Length: 593
Image 1 (tube, rainbow, N blue to C red):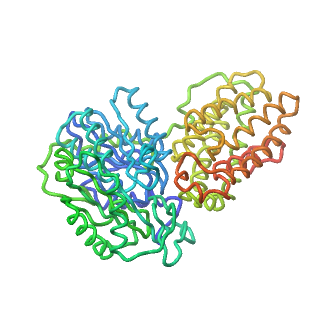
Image 2: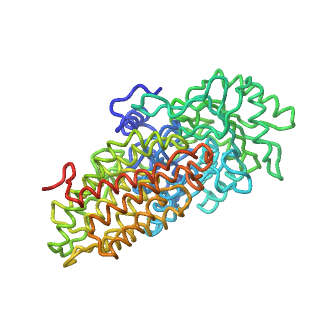
Image 3: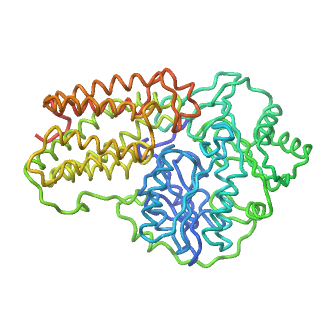
């Protein structure tokens, strides 16, 4: 159990502060994460890794010579925000372009892709690569849908070594993709992990069993089998990763036997003795194996086996020297690089060194604002305050629902996002901003401070909902609100790619919009129309219990998800009812009078 913390809400920031002090010769803070303490050589490709926290030494532990130039640091098991990824890349860029590398999870894909697009628009050549090594998470003909787990480490290492050699961005990207294509991982879980501040683990494995096909975000295994001896487990893991050996194999492999946090080194060595013997008996040469904790999941008990099928290029890069806080190999020549402290300090825009670049209401353009829009802006701020109150009350239950087939962070992520959005909305509304500016400020802060899938989607929804409620409108009515919800829904669905029936928040959002539109068109007052639409969202959210997730982190555990409603759909219905109370004049905690 994760027992040592001060405030669970600031656990990641507190951890990162300690990490930076302990490893000051390797890394310094950047907006959204960390970068090497020494500057990137002019023209060198910057390899930026990252994802949610809880996986140490991934991701910040591999920042250093021969490995990553920077790491984007999200909250526990939560994708970093777009601003976080952008901030670290800006600090790491040495003029040779940026390669983002992280696991293949919906929130990471959305946020890192958006950061890439922003950097490209500013003239920084930036690429993204999402690792897909987990053989248990999708069949081989759907490999693009697989998760990235301990194989992340292999791809990071190859990309970092290639960049250290001075290769150009095209070549570094190609080699990293080649490493991903030739890397396979299979894992088992022995017990779940505990989020900081939680009373119990996200899940438990019954005595005498193991969860087969684990993830690294506290997800349970895809199935449960009897726990065998270490030797039998070693053969099970090995057979599964060897089953997908590439056709042009040299029969030379790099290997990682990875502990998830509570399965310690002595146990891992017992498993490795059989893995190593079987590989040699079957005609393979093992090159520089790594046995230890490289990609963990807080205090989760479990083990995974990763093989990378080597060729000449991959073997050279796999064996190349590196010097980082958590991983050292060989000896590196001292490489020139300017002190980066001044540059990083110039990028920081908030007090805490590890927080992301934040756009505040004062950054918004000044526009003419009417009385009608200012009143609407205050109402938006009241609605977000009510949403925050409702989500804080439901945080634990939303986390419980999410943990059935996911990582259990939905409640905490929603609270973090809505709190930032509500504060930004109140500040903008109190300064006289209209509805569009208030929504834009709220959306930017939600996406920036929450990260994760829900963060980027809610940020997009609120930001897109603003323009149909312009600050200079002489009047605003129900039809304008419908247009705002429709614009937000369109943006959310375009960004997230979800469709009805995928078991996501879309399954509650679309029924809400349909009823709201019909009620307003029929002449119902907005408060009544919204309330009936919220009821429709609640019914639809409950109906997601019967669905199997087709996208997102819960997809590999689709069967386990049946019988439990989707957490995103549930939270959407919850906040819809909270807003209904504000529109009905029931007030909201912290609302302006």
